[in-house]
Image (spheres, rainbow over the protein chains, first blue to last red):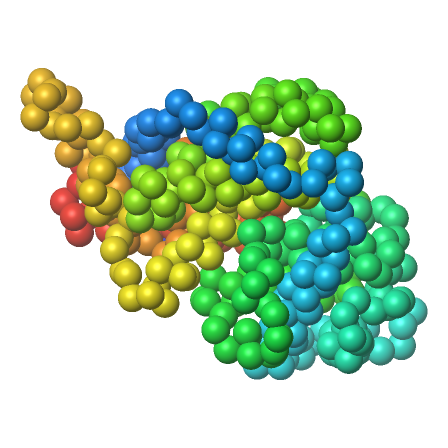
Length: 219
Length: 192
């Protein structure tokens, strides 16, 4: 009997990202449909890799340097951006809480209890977000500082971070390009305008967050 | 294209730039201006807008230099900024009511067909079709495809850029490729 099509595995197979490629290879040897689909994916991948790069204007770098000329020197920057970074993080976390309540409870129905805490993961997540939301700006003592999360490349996974630093890093990691201006005033109001892409970012952030609560930090 | 060969010296340049060495920052800009611009150009509506965003990427980089730590490929941090800025720009354009697809720029990337021999005209047609199909994808699908196929990042690096898990990259990339395949067939460009 012929095995089922493997369309959903072809992308990862193409990239050498399957742990057991042998099964797909055996199927491909006997299934012209899947073999044909793989050829299409490979061809489009090759064409994408050959797309023309845009011309770059000769003064591109010069204009960047001109723009940063008025910025404080890197070594002196940093703390001045905490306020907006904190506000950005607050919006992100608030958005994540909204999403959490709206979308994720079903997914968490079978969530495990985090080791040692005595709270279901669901309650721990809500408590964490509420702590942030109730704080006026960055909280003094971020409750998860002792349980760092591997949610972004900028957040160290092997050492606790200070509350303020964490909020700052989180904002930059989640939304490095975020403008401070739209975040002035009502943070909750800003959520009403979330684009689908932002919603997806927040959703994934929260998934990572919950995953870490349930499983600890992956080394 | 891969950016891995740069990684060691990237971070050395970052360390020098953090110490106030403007030449090191300039080298970072020159090293990444082309790939960052290419990514931005494929994400947004016009060359001018892409160039503005690409420049803004480096300004943002400058601002966060003090907080950068050597924990991932440097390029993933930069593409993370580029991805967010382009998504912001697309969102703003949508709010303003501009729904122009990315490939419908007044200055298309594919070369002028009239100045090319027949075989290259065919290449131009293929590239135009590919651009149109790419433009029809959601920005998130377009981003993951560009990071993989054009920038050559591996799944771990893409996960860093997108701030998600490797499994999410794998599934999103599979969906993006399938969407692109279907769009190409609809546009008659399935014989790439």
